[in-house]
Amino acid sequence: FIVITWNMRNKNQSTALVPTPKLHAPAIKKSSHVATVKLVDDKTILEDKEEVRTKLPDILGRVLACIWIDPEFYHSFANDPKSTLEKNGVFLPQDIFLDFEKPRADRPKVVVYEKKKDSKFKLRVMYLQLVMMAGR
Image (cartoon, rainbow, N blue to C red; front, side, top):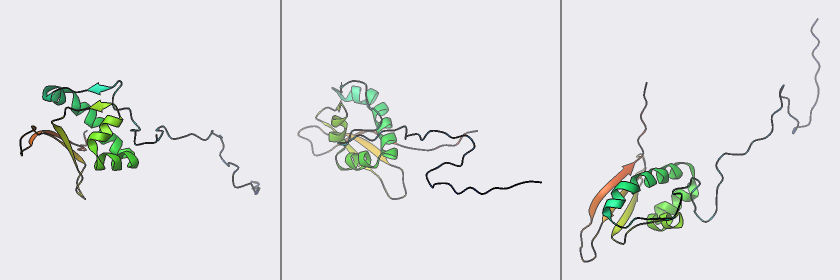
């Protein structure tokens, strides 16, 4: 014989065979538009275009990751990329500008420009975009 008993439990009481403690999310959302992921270990001041070319791609990769997981950071960066970087400890030269592009169906892209003081033109230094690839 198999005896089945029905026990009415409280809604909050677990019916799991092995109870587990309730866990919290691994990423903690911080206030004032500070990234969920730390962009840099220490205050980082990029002094010229060469430093921008060598150090900024890694930082912007982290920015794109934060944009993916943190809506507050996404909106902050979309509205004012340079200021958002500064709030997170990254300071760019005066002649370096960032554009954040997010077409509807496309992945986010950050374009880095250099614009000299008395020039009307801006020169693209680089751009970074999230691209997903599957491998086997």
